[in-house]
Length: 322
Image (cartoon, helix red, strand yellow):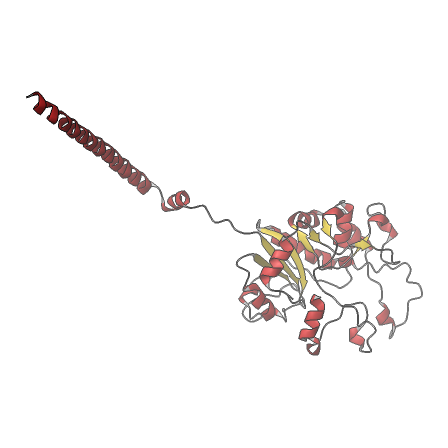
């Protein structure tokens, strides 16, 4: 008998272990089932948008470039820009300043990107007057309303892009500086001594109108109430040399200051604010003055060259890029 009992004892222990494991498995399985039902019930009570937030991170919008066009009326090269903006992936916004009352609708533009993109508080712009500055400030004011606009590019109605959107976007966003062509202007007749002491002569700067501003610098331009009044009061255009060829030359032009506000305002303002260390001091917009001695009268003088259709060759584009 003793041998028989000894043979059965391990078998009873094995059965007890199996039963114990089964009960433990049933217990945890039931607990897991109850937790799953509870979780499903709770999630079912959460609104759909909250549920989406729980299972995925919200989409983060990329910063945008605001393209600010200063135009007379239409944009004659709009279809070139249309092709450019197709690669934008919502990384841009467009604002156009045209003459007061002009609308970009289906009758005046062929590109959907420019539909209703005019600012409705535009001002009449006269070349050589401070009204050009006011147009720039109007564009910036509208563009700053969108918190995603992080860079602000000024363009004319005769500008075209030389590179695709992705290259342009990456290039502009690759630095924290503004691109502002700026240098000390010592040419007589530009600085009006009456601006002193509000604008001392050592802060007087000149450069291209076609700047790219950071949001910080764009805000400074919009909020300025000191430098702009000086330009409005003391920057008045005088007769230009090319006009004198057919008109009487004034006896004394020394008291007239051909200030050219759009070439001096942003540069001088940022110098006044001691922000020149935050600039890349060059323009990203190509302009050519090389044909100023041309025999064709319309291709010389105080304005950069307007390229003709015959000029627009692959060789010219390659030359400009280099």
